[in-house]
Amino acid sequence: MQRDRKKIRVVCLILGGGKGTRLFPLTKERSKPAVSFGGKYRLVDIPISNCINSGFKKIYLLTQYNSTSLHHHITNSYNFDRFSSGFVEILAAEQTLENDSFHQGTADSVRKSFQHFTIQNPTHYLILSGDQLYHMDLKAFLDYHIKSKADISVASTAVNRSDASRYGIMKINRESKILDFKEKPSPDEDLTKWKIPESLKKDIPHEKEYLASMGIYIFNAKTLEEVLNANDSKDFGKEVIPASVKNHKVNSYLFDGYWEDIGTIKSFYEANIKLTCIDPEFNIYDEDEPIYTHPRNLPPSKINKAFIESSLTSEGCIITDATIKHSIIGLRSVIEGGTNLDHVVMMGADFYETKDERQQNREENKPDLGIGRNCSIRKTIIDKNAHIGDNVRINMDGRIYENGDHGNFYCADGIIVIRKGAYIPNGTVI
Image (tube, rainbow, N blue to C red):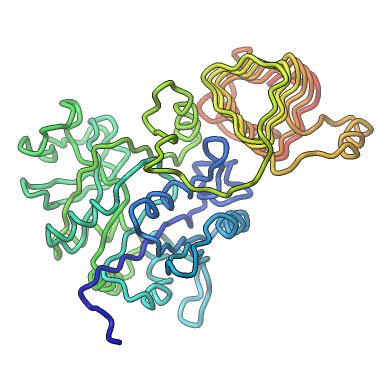
């Protein structure tokens, strides 16, 4: 039977291969897409869920660094039935006779993996980032791309002048065609000519005068192959898109929903804490746009006694006589009596300690897994499998630490990060 050449066939490419240096130390032992989020999810669950909710189920995840835990998560989370023809497949960086180097950027990672995509005979490629927070109807994005007859479409969001320097900024005409593209303009650069045309600002807040690229693209299949073969450009945002504006029809697709780049410790921390608001901008309780993840079959959380205000508690937690405010409590978290948490992101644990393991801790004068008694902790990220002893104080006393590594913990913009698997002895003050 001859294949229908008019049928739309979309292949989704999620880019998650960078070192994730801005998220260090959370990326010390795991890739950026594998970082825990919201108590029970991983960052990669966000773009994958957006694809699935939009009806796109042919998904490749391009990785390079520390991909073991990501492989485990994907394998245990995304198994489509054999009749759907859907898949989520990881493509790790590989050396071949033709290419003996690792990925040098987003475009380079797609170029070096291209032979794996073509077997799907796609008409379009949807390229997404692995570290962003948003709900987006990607089918509507594709419909716009096809209707506009563009070669490339770039999802964009309106930003104010102070934020414009963080992103790639686009100059567009009244038909939303991109005329020029500028990557991260300096704060003092004159951007008067880059403002959004007034005819397109109907529902955009007055102070948001510029269009920023979200790092989400749709390419016609032939166009993507052409631009990748044209030269050895390494990055989509810095090289491929600016060059394509000159030779192809590249359109901007304005997205007016919530979107957040969560690639730094500060933005990651704030995005988690915002989930504790009464009416958060990013809604994880929308049945029409669920976030999929690994079903772990954990027991319900056991709250022996606690005061909990504006917080999220995940499955399998054991909380005893604690006070928890505006915090995220991750899977299998154990919190003992008299402890106070305020604006804390606790990622939880990958396992429960046995009685024998707890006894061994006592013999070695080590704290148990979780948080001990009478601790006070604020504005802190506690990575997985941390052991925090009794009477520990973290970020409570106004101490100022330089950004960077401090042994068992890391500091970034006033946020303390307790490392994965760290042991914090009784009575420690940070």
